[in-house]
Image (cartoon, rainbow, N blue to C red):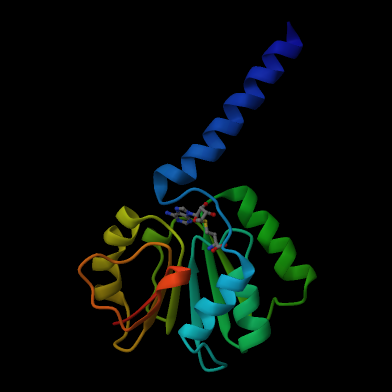
Length: 169
Ligand SMILES: C[S@@+](CC[C@H](N)C(=O)[O-])C[C@H]1O[C@@H](n2cnc3c(N)ncnc32)[C@H](O)[C@@H]1O
């Protein structure tokens, strides 16, 4: 009886964990590393940049932006498990000076320090972010999206074969 109860609780926990992040913006699905490099190259990320990854998952984009491109990077993640996992990755890989992780919803965080934004979310979530971006981001801020476009916005550049899209505010 106890075993069934524990199993049912574990299944319930898994379902809540998996679908909660989906409900608030996008489920977890890491960007393949070759696409991470292409996104950062398309946006010409460099050591003068402050890059924000909205929904930073395991931290791969923020750590790559800091390590390979010299940027300051901020990851925002609402899933506590991914946040804790990425925090350990950042601390034990020695990126603490260049990478900051914030726990919570990116809808509630101020983005005005960003010079580059990266997103791998969903089309409807991108659309919900448009007004926030226009309100908070400085002119010239680059936004790179993987898979999903920002409907109605003019593209600055793209790698259509890789489904990577660049916009400039
Ligand atoms: C498709 S994954 C992308 C992860 C990472 N950016 C990458 O490219 O590998 C989307 C991530 O966004 C997170 N997320 C979804 N909605 C969010 C929200 N409102 N605030 C913060 N993080 C969110 C999810 O938990 C998930 O880790």
